Image (cartoon, rainbow, N blue to C red; front, side, top):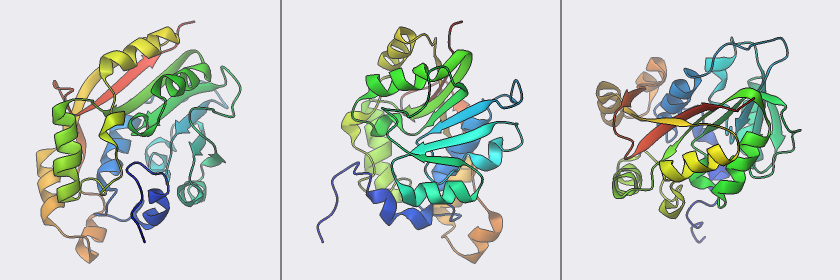
Length: 241
């Protein structure tokens, strides 16, 4: 059977068993989800809506379920959405570049590790901003379109298992200047900062093979802020009133 093209969404069906497996292929995504959730404040009102764009298996859920939001997850692949729904996410099959949601309906929009996968980043950003209420919060993280971003995410990441082989197309990596400009065009003043894996967590994960001990330990690392945005970066901004 021929391999799928880079960034083909069908890869996530083949990897569906990895979403919640400690020490598995999506381990680093758990660290990113926790770091992303740390930027989300408690719900500002009863019935507040958090839209999780590209939610996959719902990795954000354990970190935001106590914050009081109605958690809506959007993704193209049912295999991940079924796992998100099992954890309480209101799951919707849809393209993040064409959200089936009313304008100004979300208090928070989260876009974690999705912008480096979309063919039309400006259209996707416009949609993320469209569904935000005035004063609403946009939180995201993605991979920088630099030589270092490509080297770490593709050359090293795929070799050492930090990313499944072929899951990324480096041509779609996102320049933070372009991203902030598109957000500003759509009413969100985005501020970015770099993030990286903690060294102890990364070492522990690389040298502790998945298995019973890894399962007992749970997820093994976390993300920490860094001055450099050359590889991974977070963004946060509010929509103008």
